Structure formats: C-alpha cells, structure tokens
Length: 403
Image 1 (cartoon, rainbow, N blue to C red):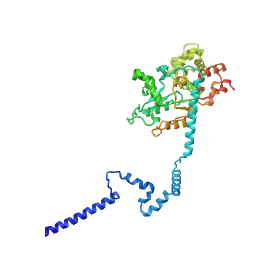
Image 2: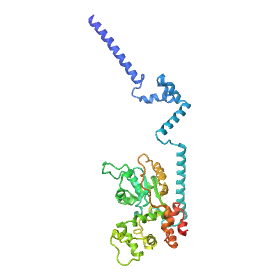
Image 3: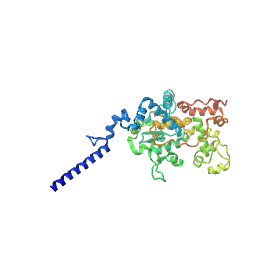
Image 4: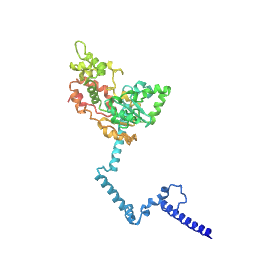
C-alpha cells in the first residue's frame, strides 16, 4: 500500500507540474499554436492590421481605437508634425517635393532635347562621327563605376574635383591611411590625390584590359549605365582656367604653356626665367589677352597643346555620341547635385561635398574681356560656340559688343 500511495502522490505532483508548464508556455506564446515553427508575427498581422487595439489591455484600448479612427489618424499625423517641428526637424512637404522633382525632370528633358537638336542641326568638328570612330585617347574623361553602373565625364573647372571624390567613394578605389578602409566621406579625400589617373577606370583604359572586346563593352555600358556630366558658361570657365593655371606660379603650366605664350606674344627681349617662381618674382607672366591670342593661333588646335582645362566640352565628353542621362550646371550645382544623387540611388551613401564658392563669377566677364579686341572676341566665340549652343548658354552679346 505504501508503494501505491507513493506512486499516486508522484503522479499528482507530476500532473500539477505539467499543468504549470502548460500555463507558463501558453502565457508566453499568447495561445495554442498548431504550427509552432511558423513566424508568429505573420500569424498575428491579419488581426492587428485591422485594429491593433484588439490585443491591448482595456485601459488603453479606447485610446488606441481613437488613433486608428479617421479623426484620430489626422490628429496623430498632426501631432507628429508638431513634434518634429519642435525638435528642429524640417517637415517634408510631399507636394513641394513632387513639384521640385517634376520641375527637375522637365529641366533635364529640355537640356537633353537641346543637345539632340544642336547635334542634328549644326555641323561642328566631330559632331557627325560615330562613337566607334572616336580615338581611345579622346575617351579618357569618361570615368566608369561598375559597382553602381555610373559613367561620369569630368570637365576641368566644373566642380570635377568633388565629383571625382564622389566617384572614388562609390568605386571604393582608395583606402584611407587613417582607417585602413575605403573612403566613405568624399570631402575627406585630399584634392591632390583625387586627380591621380590611376584611381579612375576610364574608357581610354579599356583597350589595355579588354583588348578587342573593349569597344563592345563600352557600347554595352553606355546603353545600360547612367551617364552624367556638369557644364559651365564657356567664357567663365575659360577665365577660371586662366586664373588657376597662370594667375599664380605653376611650374608645369609655365614650362608647357606660359613660356610658349610669352615667347610668341609677349614681345619680350632676352631670355625667359627658367622657373615660374622666378618669372613671377620678376613680374613676368602671360596676360589674358596673350592667352586668348594663343588659343586663336592655328597651331594650338593640336590636342597635345589644347589643354583639357580650356578644351571645349564637346571635345571632352562627346555629347553628340554619348546620350547623357543627366546634364548638370555649375550655376545650379547644389540643387543639381542633390537631384543627381537621388537619380543614381546613392544619396543614402554619401553627400556631395560642400566646398568654397568658386571665385570666378559670371559678372566678371565684361571686366576680363574689356581689353580684348572685338575681332578676337568674335573668333573666340566661334571657337566655343558649340558649347554655348549645346548646353543652352546665351551668346555673350554684351561682351562681344563691349556695351
């Protein structure tokens, strides 16, 4: 009998223990589930999507029901707006965003259509040749990022330093010596480093990597990648290039161009200083008029002489052969950069670096060209006329007529 009684007690105690376990398990999972391996969140969603207050305690169910009613939803949205405003956040205006996006798309459509019209209606050097007829050496400004399927044609003196920084970050082609990892902040990349040609994969390098397949790969990437460039008023860009390369000592440009300009148009007697520093110390440097004379000299039309800093955009980026998806302007750099990063779907990865404003202003044109004879101005305009027309910059009548 003692053994039987012990078994009964053990059975009762075991049953109580099992019941307690069931209760504890039931309370933990929220109910009995025939499919314990299924995601419980998926099981509960059909109920909570209709009214989440059905699973809440009675003390807050009324409040939750109010929030999920139409009146409550309006109050909740308004409350979030007030909270965000109070914390200093800018409340997004959907209508305003849509309006800006629409205006941006219309602007891009107009810019691209203008290029197509000019290419179809004007005859200027290289406008009618096919893409496969462009020599490889003339494709060295088309930078390719295969990871994000982007092609950028950089134009010197048109924010190209910062756009090259952006391309370096996206392609992860440069490691920071501080972190030992690829740069993630474009603004932290040194300007003198970002211009190294080894950092960027360009179309001109395809031949070395892909051989006979290079042209085919270019065509494929041009068809499927997003292509962009930034432009600027051609004469203002020309002033900027002169100020940058001849307005302060630059040994390379003095040796290759400055000394040539001075010998040809400087009317100097005797020998020139050997270095740019010595020339500047002696007050010897090219004037802007001498620079313009150099550009108009027929001999300077050779590619090796007509440097990229003042070479026309149509010769750098071939807009009649490359159908760009986005044409930005330096005059609207901030808004265009924001729009472009969204188009490229990389705005969550980085921001366009903010730098000092370019000190060459469009209002300076008249002063800089005041001493240039009208005949020279007319010839200079003809030299850059395709850029003026392709990218929608008005003919500088006030400059040409010196009004």
